[in-house]
Amino acid sequence: MIDTHCHLYDEKLYDNLDEIVSNANKAKISKMICIGDNLKTSKKSIKISESYNNIYATVGIHPHEAKNAPKTYLNTLETYAKNHKVVAIGEIGLDYFYNNSDPEIQKKIFFHQLTLAKKLNLPSVVHCREADDDLYETILKSNNRCGVIHCFASNTNFAKKIIDLGFYISFTGMITFVSELSQVIKDIELKHIMIETDSPYLSPVPYRGKTNQPAYVTKIAEKIAEIKKISIDEVIKITTANAYLLFNKLKN
Image 1: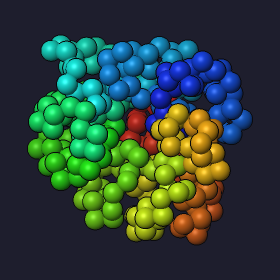
Image 2: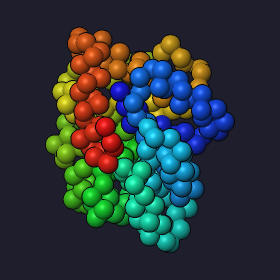
Image 3: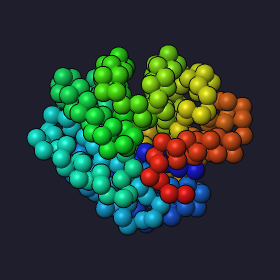
């Protein structure tokens, strides 16, 4: 089982990182991908990945951080991405819910990072909140056809459009308390799905109100198995295979 999206540099996890990693190992989480969301946390993600054999990193500028991106950010990301433990460009995308950065700036930064990912032959880890149409159009324009929409929270129609572009969709603990997502899971074949915690955020039931951690990705797998009426072993097998297919720098 792989937690394809966690933020281990967050102080809620980093301050007890050895224990967090130990918990993940006990839960049979074979790999964790630590997701950068600006230049500082991208660098931290790499540092963490170099300290643990089963942790990998991504580098990128989150839409919340788009307005603060320095002029040389693409060069810096490209340098970071050369590290052998960096498996993707991300977390990148669009967020019109919080709108912390102007939408036009968000689209520009997103497009340039999609283009960088394509240039480097790396997948993209994409954030999308209340920006489905613009996100789809930006991906289409970039000609990037390799990535995942993390923390998927939209509908079946958008899921199918994104999958048709060559992207996976990934689910978090939200599926244990947002009933509308069950229909998406029913409608989409498992070969297009991955699982993640987005820890320390979005703790699944029964850990609501507590700090999330990679070990809890088991609860997402269990919920998908319940919704699809299949075994948890099948969910683990296929979602893990999907992660290896997308993040091809991960080592078995």
